Length: 269
Image: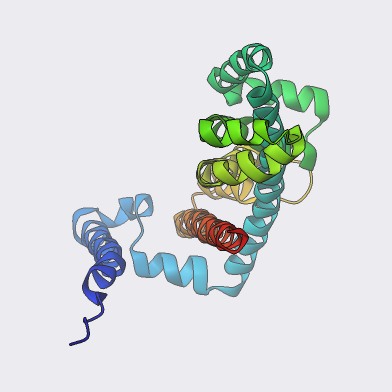
């Protein structure tokens, strides 16, 4: 007899978050419609009203999507720069203890400094345009990439390291054929963590750096000041959806990269 496919756990894994979402929306509708007074309903407009005004209205939808695209560009560029800088620094630190002891404490210090305290300085030094927004993303997102990549590089099998030394492999060969492939799971974990932080950094930059195209952060600030709750909630939901999409995309990228590495390793045997 052939074994039945295990569709139950997968279906529950997909269905459970949607049931929670439906429950939250139902409670939101009940609270907005029956608990809040009508004159205070602007604090939490009903879900249907948010959809109609914020998403179905063509003008509002276009404005929110344009702002989200501008923020997404900043977030993705900042994430790419963070991956490059974080990987290079982790590689340098993995090659010599004195390099790690020299650089890692300053990476920790940079992580502990509140970014909001640095934002005025960044604007004063570098202006208030696209580059400053990217810099904020990098400051927020680079640390998890450094720590995850460094952990992965330092976790390489010692026996394999000894084997590479016995065969007098070059430093470049050791890095590209042993250290980086072995560190790939840890590296992609850092990428996924930093992906969400980069989106947060882009929104923070939108709030403070107001030159160039308006991002979603500037739009949300404007909706709050003009008491436009439907557009505000719609912008928050679309921003959250974008963050989830980026997180899911990096999860898929992780599976593809690790799967390709395992296939190449089997082929090399």
